Length: 223
Length: 267
Image (tube, rainbow over the protein chains, first blue to last red):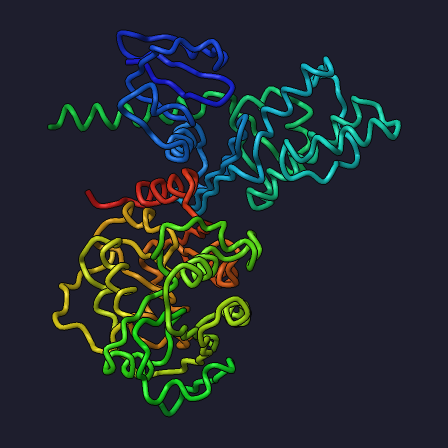
């Protein structure tokens, strides 16, 4: 059984059972059009599977599986949007999915890295961020700052911190949050949050799909 | 009409209401006082609920009159008013509606050549809320409640009631498609319940919700009721705040689906 998390920029696969594999990542623009999986999530998931799990459910199931606490907040920062799940006493307390004002943040951060040839592992967290609400609108802050003599590195770092603060506020300013998505590998982004952050990596939704697949199989076996 | 008032605001309205000759098609916005609905019913006047989608005209045709960043329901009112052949409009602008409707009344008056009559519905006689507590598809339930505003009569037959598994709090959404996601055992709260009860200014009833029932607190984006929806969702033990503009996007629908599933939607 192949599971697929069809994100905007990257697709993540996991094989279970006879197809057992470690998670595999490929860029979305390299995905063969005839790809089919047993169970899918993500923006483009419905095109590649007959069995679709919505991203918030996959995120929640992944969080239930990976996080030991009964009270937690799990924030997923993707290429295109941000979403969070909050649990209290082991039950869903709140959730959010911001596809507009959190738009294109992960995508923009990666775009800037390539365009300016930056290494986020080496950029320090700036003291002050730009006030940005989304990747697209925040770009003009960078261009203005560079025109006014600020280095590209510092301008982009301010932008990234602004994006992180926006995500933090969207999640309800928690004291601690678990982070999901490709930005877990970006220390500038992770360290820009003004709270404790526990990065879980980019396979949390796949883990959630794995839990859902287990439920599906149990249902099939019982019927 | 002891507690309600009619204010004539247009030059053309001076003596129109008595007699009702010439009135065949009227639009209503919000819930005008029962006395007016009864009057229109008795005189065989056809009522159009302008809050609902009544024409296929583009919502953008309201743009010359209202900002694009405005309540989608009231933009719909504007479009309906521009495209339907109406003899008059009754728009409720009292405590049972909203400040935005108060201002839209002035816009309608300026844009149209028909009488625009402001009303303030403070009716408190309870009609009951059997539809809100009925076991039936939420889409049909909402349709029946909104259809009910055009009649001064109570329901002929009461639908079977059921214990609630979920709650939908708020106004009837502009995009009814989100309602199809809910189970038939969803109870309706908020201003929609006030609509069925024919007491739109009953703020205690509007603020009522059941703490034992997982509830989606819905408001139209750019509507002042978003503040109340957010407050109630925050105080509710299991509430989800949700707003949607013209149409509900995939993220809004995904939130509802996830909420229903993670809180145990009955199969």
